[in-house]
Image (cartoon, rainbow, N blue to C red; front, side, top):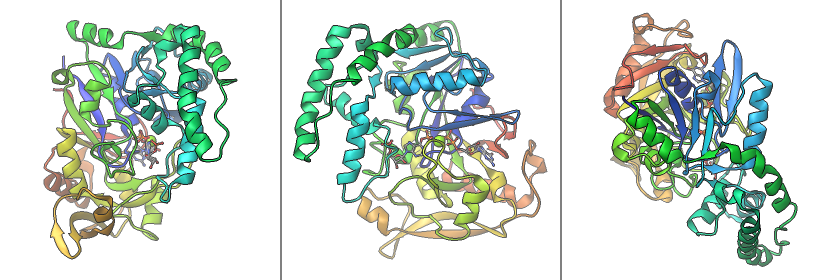
Length: 427
Ligand code: GDP
Ligand code: IMO
Ligand code: MG
């Protein structure tokens, strides 16, 4: 049975959640492999909007979900999200959700560090302030707490004390009070019985799934340009967002992750700071923001908008191992007289066809834009390729040519079935 990995191919918010929900119809399990509640994944089903942050996007269909070891899990945020889902009629029980024992815990102290780090940066990253980066720092610093630690309260207290002692020096250095143990410890101990029933051996469940021919969708959060290795460092998140992260972040063999479906809008957005060569400030960037509803799902921040950058998308596709593209939000371009693709860069006046490594060089890039005719009328809800205006088809084909990856899907509205399927992402 074939699996699929869903990877954000730009700077996040490409519509991964709705693509995962669509794929979940034909899947047995959906697994999150990276990030935490910095993610915001939106599903619209029969007019009802679901906003997911930590839960795998298959839960709305009642598909079993797993949260892998690569995820940074804030237990408070998880319980709140399960509560929000319950209020919308979606019951998330241990029968449909299992969390890896070795997932990293995001704690209140991480939120405090995230905020303090942003305040002291000469150039802030514009993080979501959810504590995600500091939690991953503690993980690789080998002092982090993991979900399995919730099962041993005495040891949990010791580990938390050691973690706080480490950070106390830093807080004091900034003239801040060290972060207190209480009420964080008591809150964790109180939450433990609610979280522990969900905890299991995710790697083993994936192995069983493989042996019994089950189909798995791996759900990435964030995106290639926010990847800690391949993104526009340091304006990135702190996890591995690419297909390789699906293996290291869940315990499945890299040879078993299956096809990689990269999700990209037909234009581009970015939240937070950092280089964005094809950004359009003023109109028509403002029009894209209004029509595309480009405001952060969690933080409500307006997203920066611009034209699709095919140089970025080509390079991202290579490093993320993208086999097929899902292009989203075609309907947002309805009514534009002209639309553009960024097809090259000028670095200090010299044309290049790759993304340079340094942030300073990335900031100096000028886009080489190619103009395309827009189209009249609406593509909203179109479900057949043949029903698209010829200008929209020309744009899609140009994207496919420039990026060098086949387009498997095009979405034409936020509703679950507002999509044109050209090729099944499952092998
Ligand atoms: P994710 O983080 O990649 O899952 O994406 P987000 O949920 O943060 O952002 C995508 C936004 O675009 C959501 O508001 C979706 O409802 C919306 N959306 C997704 N696909 C389409 C589409 O084809 N057309 C339109 N108009 N909106 C879409
Ligand atoms: P989804 O899964 C868009 C951005 C933040 C900031 C940078 C680092 O919905 O696509 P962090 O809090 O992770 O340390 O912030 O990454 N960012 C996202 N941008 N979509 C996301 O998730 C994001 N998650 C983090 O805005 O620039
Ligand atoms: Mg999002």
